[in-house]
Length: 405
Ligand SMILES: Cc1cc2nc3c(=O)[nH]c(=O)nc-3n(C[C@H](O)[C@H](O)[C@H](O)COP(=O)(O)OP(=O)(O)OC[C@H]3O[C@@H](n4cnc5c(N)ncnc54)[C@H](O)[C@@H]3O)c2cc1C
Image (tube, helix red, strand yellow):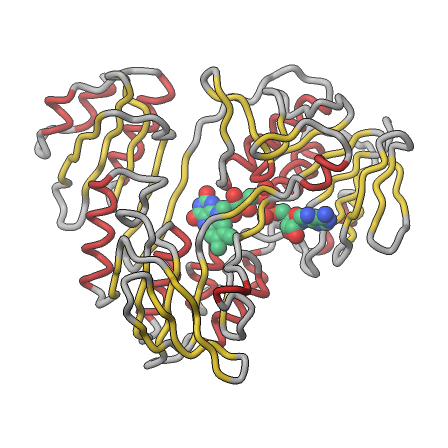
């Protein structure tokens, strides 16, 4: 048995690392230290079924409490790690207590960007959507007839809009950029989702930013928008992106860029410290990227577990992602970074479609909207590195199976 592995961050990646190590038969002492009061849980339902009230919190937990004792994984919840003392090989908690490590893993995730107090970000009734606490507060506000302003047309904002409409609220969503989903998806995908939300009576205002929130008795009551208009609101959801939690690493002198810099083995610039999940910047096709997804957190943690347990297999990201809005399931395979061409394939069923991304004529990603076949086909093509025929893709009656032949 080797010395203690300490994992900072009891989220998707932190849990996956511990679980995979035990799955590999590794019996070293493991301690997971996490700031939240809950056992590790999955975040995606927080803006989907959990917020809708269709999923109990217990079902979000990766494992029940006894799993940690059964597997000799010590878990310290409600514990904030303040510092890494690399010379002493210890982490320092907020209360000053210390914990020795032989190997350290940073799985600290990311923090949602907040609205600055100067534009009303500190008013009551302004919410984020990152953790269970946020979701519980939001759920309490979601009552029929109330007016919500959602700031940000990314997946978090759109999912919150769908839940709010489902619960009978009046929803306005503003997006400062030219269109919704600008950072993450092509115009074709954005057009489809805009139409879906408009069909559900969400007011989507693109190229519209927030000037400031207006409050009465410290509670938000209205929003002044960049086009000079003012709308009355009962509460606000802010979904304007996240920043990596890399402060611990930075202060400990580790290399940090847009996140903690790691190699393909999830190693930081200190070989005894690993990092994974939302908080890292990792190698990708000769450059570096930061990914915010369950797939990345889990696969990277599992690859790191292999290395920590003595293996040599590098992490080779195979990105996939999903989003649920109303009865629409979006599934994404691949990563569309740097795409220069797209192809829209209408689906045979009503409401089904897929958007195929190419970079220098090479197929790199697909957004499949209510079209599981397009998703599975795209994923397989990416695994084999094959380039699909544009003719077949463009013909909605053609069987996608042909692309795999
Ligand atoms: C509402 C929501 C919906 C999402 N939907 C999807 C989806 O549909 N599909 C998808 O693929 N991804 C989705 N994601 C993204 C996905 O959940 C994240 O990419 C994933 O959770 C990242 O895992 P992680 O372990 O890196 O970070 P997290 O799961 O965020 O865990 C990090 C943990 O570290 C703790 N921590 C940070 N600093 C410290 C410290 N100093 N001391 C102690 N603890 C600390 C944090 O409190 C947190 O609990 C969603 C995220 C959110 C918030």
